[in-house]
Amino acid sequence: MVHVYKIKKSLQIPMALALVLSVPVFYDLFTRGLPTGQLVLIGILMVLFYLMAISNLIRRVILDGPKLTIVNYLGRKEIDLPSVSALDGLSLGKRQFLSVSSGGRHHLIQNSFEGFFELMEAVSTQVPATKIRDGLEQIRRFPQVRTGDTIAAWVTVAILAAVIFFRFVPH
Image (cartoon, one colour):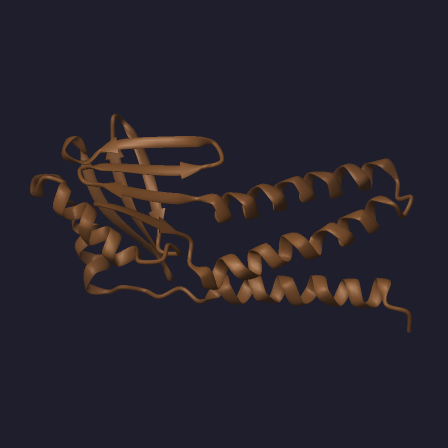
């Protein structure tokens, strides 16, 4: 059975709103007649903002039996779970990651995915027990729920909305 895991809806909605609200803000900045150096810096920040937001909106993890596929804007990475060299877990504050090592490469799957713990358990049943490391057990015992990213995304939406209001709405 195929299972598709996406970034949580509670994070996708404000990210999509921030993308839409950022268009008039960036347009305004580019049409103000700022010096070239500032425009280059704004352009770099804009590209990074859009790349990160779009990456999060399209990122997918697909579990299809013994095959794990990680999809993002750079392409697809397919991992044969029975041949994984290590399956580990990492915790950095409220951020938790499933680390899948295969073919000399490490792939991190963060806990901002809907059904992260279900995904973690499903992957761990496909990997040989000798390849599962202690970090995974730590995440199982102490699961963390991240709300900071969602709050930060909504704060971004509020700031962009305030900029649009004060810049474009007549007072």
